[in-house]
Image 1 (cartoon, one colour):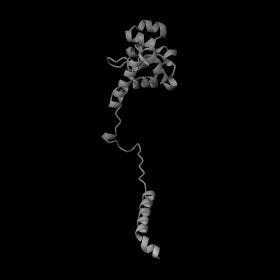
Image 2 (cartoon, rainbow, N blue to C red):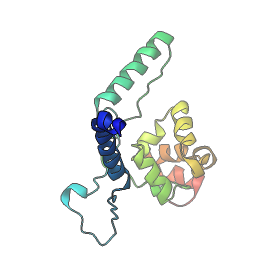
Image 3 (cartoon, rainbow, N blue to C red):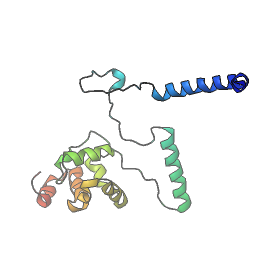
Image 4 (cartoon, rainbow, N blue to C red):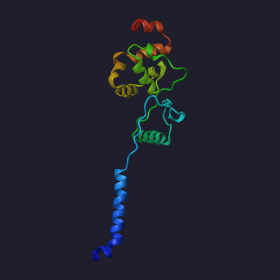
Length: 165
């Protein structure tokens, strides 16, 4: 009995801590599920991202660091894709390019035939390696060669090599 008279404040604090920890551990948790029938509010809409480099400070820093490393190593580490000038072309005209592959190329910023035609060998390998199930299409279907003809507007030469457009 003397023990409780001496240590009652410590026991009271221990019981209070136990109650608080128990409440935090066993309290009801909020369970949120969204369904397709919920209307979207303006802040919930998905805006498609335009593929480009340098949208934020981290991208800029990474590009700058790779440029400096490339300069020190005397090699091109950071290489830009050829820029798109003008309206996007219909990449589905290329033999071997379907809707999914065209969408994947558009996500990577490739929207025109002249961009594909101007890709370096290293850029083609990098893009091809990231295409997953479509890996090897660029070489197998000679997509870069096809794009070169279509970028120049040489439909006759294209059709003689690859068939009707």
